[in-house]
Length: 250
Image 1 (cartoon, helix red, strand yellow):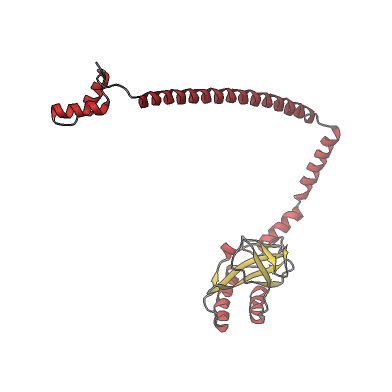
Image 2: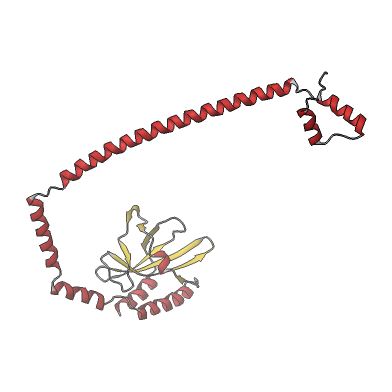
């Protein structure tokens, strides 16, 4: 008995049943041998078999390569451990000279904390050069001076601005030795006590109120609008410098 093609079998099924066959009926016809598998299906099976063989071969190659890498890693770790072990043993032998130097350094460190040094520290913190009262007076100055300059609305931005580095406008590569300190005391050349700014469209007027190490009031001006550094110079406004100096020196 000649096996029918799928199209022939479907045509005869429709003639007899008056409808198209369901998928399970078509599958049953294949299983019963009523429909012959075309050459196209044979080619498909051959291709699937070849693909499976290729995938298996690639998998075996990857597994073999991974095992080699693991062995090389273990070998490298062993060599590194041996080197570090030898280095630790060599450095573990203390010399008499280093022990003497350590004792000498300890003696020097202990001698720093003297009563005179403690007294200097107390004086350093008990005699602030900047106070809440001076900060309030500076806030009032910025209101009156801003109105005088037709620049109302200056805002204090001390917390935001005092953390960024500053460089001189005359030399962008030269960093300003400045540090913020609420009491006006620091070891830097310039101690920042307050910062005010006012934006106008895309331009900004920003003033850093500082006290130099020798106690001199010093106002820095920065028009910087972006970037992670402020470029500054001494303000040229005589009224602002004079008003700030009166606050610091009072």
